[in-house]
View 1 (cartoon, helix red, strand yellow):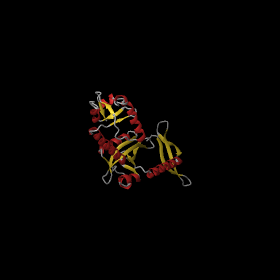
View 2 (spheres, rainbow, N blue to C red):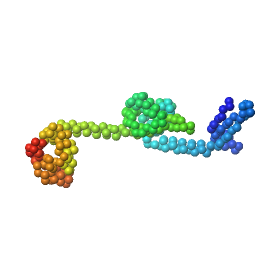
View 3 (cartoon, rainbow, N blue to C red):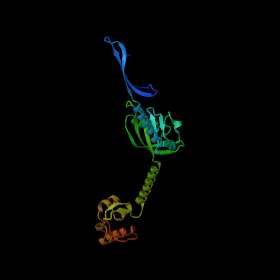
View 4 (cartoon, rainbow, N blue to C red):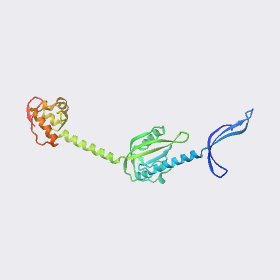
Length: 272
């Protein structure tokens, strides 16, 4: 047709029977009237390069299939092209069941979330540490941290995406338990009838509950914390008692039934 052909890969047989992978570049040869009279070609033996690429590919696949992390690869249409044993253990489907099909792990964010992440990766973006929630084959929900990167072909076009997943279900449960404990503590802290506070060894309030603020005649805990920045001089009637209290805390870690006289906001003295 008169068009040049560049880097056409083909397999040729050498005289001794060996198979050679060859890259051909072919150009049309025209006469003085512009009529095609033949072709000229340049052949380059790329067998060693192809063998090295295949060895690297196999080594990569070996690492992927031996990885303890679930690793999943998809094409540009979101069809599975690789699904390692760790993915099977994590989600319940075997590679034979999912190859060529859409990812069976449905995200709690629905198809829209999956398509949005896929689109971001296809644009060339590397995704790192994105939290997703997926449903296993048995229906259980697992929390996963997703990192994904595009896969490129020899022409530097994106041919798919490979994703690396880490199960963070237990850590998310632990976080939830910590939040629940903090909320329980906050409820006790805010509603206790006894004064509760945190302070530095140097005698500065860090936090205080409403009961303590009322005890000292302040409108709110924030007002108490902001006003009293030196307990030794502003609250303790006898300054040396504050030093005894701090020393006892440092020696024993816990101080019980420690009594002292303290100033209210109006300078009246109360026992604590």
